[in-house]
Length: 349
Ligand code: NAD
Ligand code: UD1
Image (cartoon, rainbow, N blue to C red; front, side, top):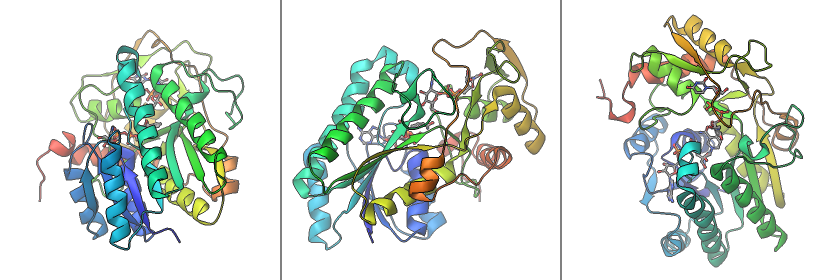
């Protein structure tokens, strides 16, 4: 079984939850992160929750020689890295429109640098954080993996480009394997309340906005449009618990370790859609916290509804999302209420 893994972006929101699940499953992850959107405190908390020490290297994935040094050091220590779980990327859609070159450099250039370092050191397995955003406007729902790609912003294009690069990378050698996990909308937090999503500044995404309203950091939620052709006029998405998502990565690593080769794109979602107002109301009901809102015009670039067909994930990985919207709200609220300022919050004993 693959044991030693490199986790790029392991200090981030999804990376930190995945680290815990990897440790639980007996893997030995090494984190490589430049902390551009995270801090070291998260890793201390993963250590505290897991009872395991975590090796961390501060560095940028665009620095190929730093990656090669890391791979070489692990080989000499008799713990060769056998696979990479690759989260490191910039992820703000609006910012990607303003700063496209930074996004292509970091997300596409960074992945090329990582693949070249892996080639130098003979590492042939990679799990990639892709996104449902690669599909763009749905031609049909649910999205299946063969839905055409039509990203609508530079961030989405970086994900689609990296998927193409990974396909070509696998095509060039039949010993390689890459799994692109296309996440739908991950929300919530680890049930301990010790790790969770800590957006810098004003959250772009719905769920952290709801939790910040509930904790009193924002006055009210802005609902972007109530005139879509959906159940109640507000946008519908496939929200999934970040712990379910994290477990998907452990299964993807196992899938590659058991001899599957080549490229696979796999949706990770629940297969169920929830509207903005349904999510806000469920949050209010299970937490007892009010979430006042106002209706604003539609957000440019938004689609009405999106949800996954998760049958490929079930068939290939044995994965399915087990945690429901209520659990996502309860766990997300536990994190937000205990850490109102994210990892900057005073740690109360
Ligand atoms: P995040 O920003 O919390 O984590 C990303 C981590 O990567 C951070 O710790 C950051 O410091 C690090 N990083 C960024 N650029 C780096 C570089 N050049 N070198 C080294 N480290 C670097 O984001 P997240 O929400 O955990 O997302 C993880 C991955 O999943 C990203 O690739 C993102 O695009 C993808 N994704 C996220 C979502 C979502 O809703 N959160 C949805 C779909 C896909
Ligand atoms: C957004 C990104 C997508 C990215 C995903 C990460 C855009 C256009 N798309 O997707 O590329 O992969 O985040 O999870 O930014 N909403 C509100 N008020 C808010 C925030 C959101 O009403 O303050 C609504 C949106 O209109 C949408 C739903 O909530 O209907 C979900 O929005 P969000 O959490 O931003 O996710 P996506 O739009 O799916």
